[in-house]
Image: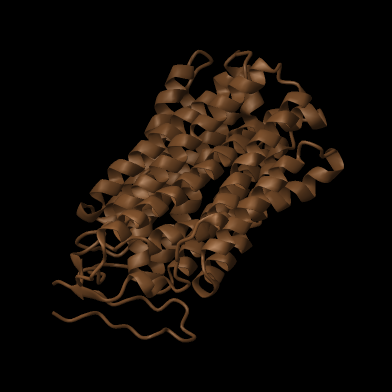
Length: 435
């Protein structure tokens, strides 16, 4: 039984770990896998937001009078997406990363392309297609996060920041692309859906050639027994549960802001054509912030970065309650900084707190809990705003409520007394590799 020992990478930021069971056996390499996973992440999250700038157009197309009728579609997507993460998280060690990630992207793309065939009386069809898209997208987090953290075990924060960059690009440029296609080319929402769907299907096919062929997403890895008291294990599980609960507060706020912004900005600016630009502003900082924070978390530690980012995010959301039109641009940009900084730092905490063998399942639970509760955000937000009359004053009150969620989560995380290692390798060694 030989314990795994690995030296530091020095100036080599992305040197992959050698592992008997996860050595690529087909086309691709660790770097091409990281690139492919990053692109997939962008497409999947781009799909979740690309129609949000056109929510008011969808309301007119389906001839409905309430905000809830439109935001409920996103709640369906998020609920199925969350449940799918749990299922695929449990199956992570039995699935091929290459086949599963590629197939999921193809299913996601075909479902989105099918939006183009829905008629004005097809809200039920939209719910079904959003659910199918969510199933395809839900394979990503448990499969991809395990894959890349196994390939780069000593740079978890860094590689999670890089793949987070992909999500940030998708979140930022999907709504901006929608706004450009609508304003410049006059495309309607169904034509845009067809374009996005075909593009994603193609990305899924290309990803198959870029991700290494492996026997499974995770090989057989056993931990060397350590003298850990049962109460310490229980405490660790409780603390991990609290971190996941804190992430849930962020998700509720994040998905609510995403889906009500079109209605809020239309009420404030009297112009429904600029939502894509403002959503772009929220997610643009993530292109720079996510990889930076991910790398810093490998050096400085996770908890303080995550708690500070959550507090900052909550404050910027609440600031929209008093903002006039001129202040919206800097506020939305700063909101994006805070939101983006929370993601790689919290995900790295979760990765550090798990073993390679159970990481896929824990990430499945993490995403299921976060997005499952996050799914309630758009639905609850729509219901509350409809009940309050959908006025600008109602939106301002609700922004304060939403901002209080990550703010409270950040304060709670900062107050927790538990040790999170500043180096991601701390939870990985010593290990025994079984061929």
